[in-house]
Length: 143
Image (cartoon, rainbow, N blue to C red):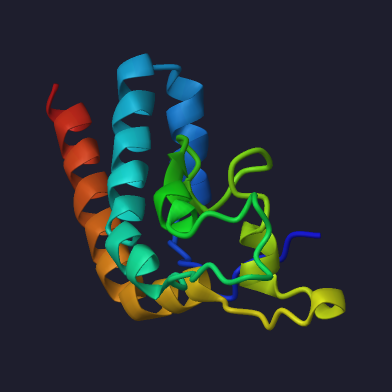
């Protein structure tokens, strides 16, 4: 079961803004808002990669375990509603959730590297989001 991050950014008036964007049905505005969301999420990527554990292969390691794949799997998924930072995939890095949230039966302690990265970079993410959305609104109002 996936857990939600305790580190989210609340923006006053965001729901009204999203509702207004949807009612305008302007594809260019939707793309610009999505790009702003993605840019604010990408501020977090270097910190998330830095915080992720550097795995080491030992004799007990599974053949599916490849050190370094977790770092490469961290990505930003954005929409007009927001952005999400994800790590792992079912086919390539199936152990990402076990590393992040822990796996008691296998004695794997939780290493919440994504949450730590968000805690350290939340001010920069918020500032980038505010700057980019402000630019989108100004561009749309001027045109």
